[in-house]
Image (cartoon, rainbow over all chains, first blue to last red):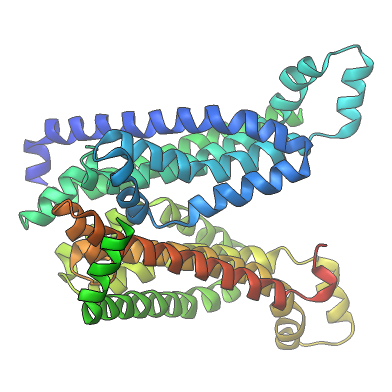
Length: 207
Length: 214
């Protein structure tokens, strides 16, 4: 505890890096998953194909994935972000597609009957109504990228894992505690915050 | 590169077989311990709303914890090696199995259970003949998730001296020796994919015919 208090600035820097890496990966993954998920919601074969590929990527063990990327992209943050994007695709695509599919067909029909274009139906009806399910996917993806970022410190991406690895290498328990507990707290807080968003959206779209 | 990896592999056969054996032993043992705890706890808690609520919440928090953080936290407490790794991996495998056991049993249509009770079945009979078979596919899905997580986590056990295929990866990264890293990364990826496939196939087989979709 004294180490943590005396070196909180070091922990804060690592935490800042951690959040930035995780957030970057999440934004990129979402930008890929959104169009794929929208198409997959309407075409069963696209859905099956996308989920099979993304599911395959998701199954690869974290450290193995980071290692396999070394010959391709080397060490560092790019490596970590590519791996994290690959890991979060499956849950994002699945939730975006099932969320859109779960919108009641008569609601979509009514919107179309009011003269809305396909684009308007998507933006004003389908995506807002699917938002609780989409946020549920984002929540799982966020926890995943936070977890992967811890490991990614081993391929020199920075973040809280750096404290853990330095602590293990130097047999310095307070460093390990500080890095590991901060990472756990980050995951739990982000998960809780997104759960609140999810419930809020579910309430407002049900009303 | 693959040829070099293959050469490294045939130059170190015992080392590889040992690492593979440790990896599988670690994964199977952690999964067995976690299932041995989470399934009975889940069954007992499923019938007690407050216990179920508490268990789901604890498991949900447990599920969010980064694997490496859990492994790292165990090290200052229990030291390094196989057993501390096993302990950490068992902890990591608990939440998905517990959640799925609870969800599987609680998700059963109340009318089905009522009908069984009306036919004069005891609580034990209902558990054995109704709840268990109906919840089994869901429990199995939890085991599948846990298995993948444990195989992936066992790679990280290399950091706390747990052995396994992660040793090749960490050494390979540390020395920037790509062939050596591949000797760890490729087999462990195949192991995870194989386990996922095997559990998926088993899951379909144990699903009662009436519940199978398509």
